[in-house]
Image 1 (cartoon, rainbow, N blue to C red):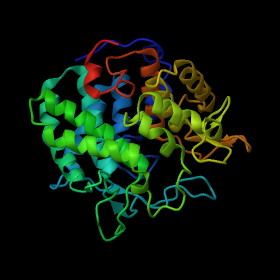
Image 2 (image 1 turned 60 degrees about the horizontal axis):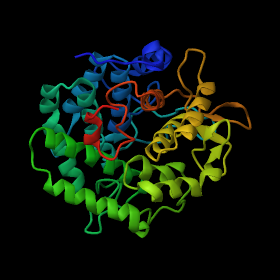
Image 3 (image 1 turned 180 degrees about the vertical axis):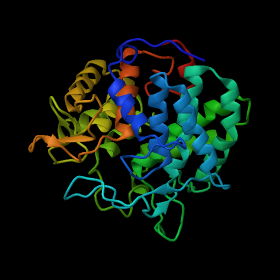
Image 4 (image 1 turned 90 degrees about the vertical axis):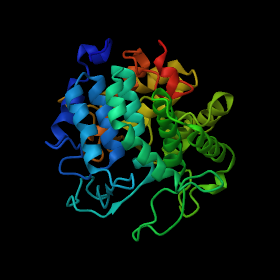
Length: 358
């Protein structure tokens, strides 16, 4: 089922970004990070969302088919890691056979992609077909929620024995749970337990900072830890606006974008586009438009987006054009221009609100 689009997406402004995602997509439907790069279900799902907004439903549906085919019986997915990007060269130097882990944030995120697909297409049969996949994934993730509300970042496999929860990952899970609940309600499934889990997780993110990043030395180092609770909807209203304003000057390089990490002359396009969505969620439309407008200077000649830009050296760093970066730009444009039915997915109070007209 087709859906109406307008603005930059319909005009073909992102053709180069879309082409980059398609260039990376493998015949089996998987979309890795980079050329010959690693794969995980989060970035794969984000890329599928970008393809769908651009009208490439067949390729987007292939992404969901791949997720169904690769999901483990317990509801999890394995994600490939390792030294994906060398800090010395800025290039991917992995073999494609890096160690695998089961990241709870990544496992939950297909729920966001599936709800996004439904809001765009209104294809309830597609939603029903993929519901078992989402149900199993969320059930697996919630087995790793503590009584305090936070969710362990990774399944306790031999490679990841430490028990910790990460702010960004848990915020993303919050959004995934929100979308999973919307899917369940659309299909008349019981959501009581999931709603209770969502409430506990939100309370932990808002009121229990000591429950996160307990083994991570660089707390508050990444910009994602700053804006993700707002982007995901766990922190809202005046509290959200205060949160964004408190570290704005620390992370924002005017005329360039959002720094990936504090204190470094390096802005990243995906983080800038996600922050654009967070700003829209708190009513800061002018700041959102400015921030997004700065990102187009970081496009390659073919119209795809560099992962980031080292502005003291004035060069892309790393020299990669990830699929998820392209998708993040398309999602931000959709929200700014209210270009498709899914434009409010990250800017409205709940996932179910996206069924209403913009």
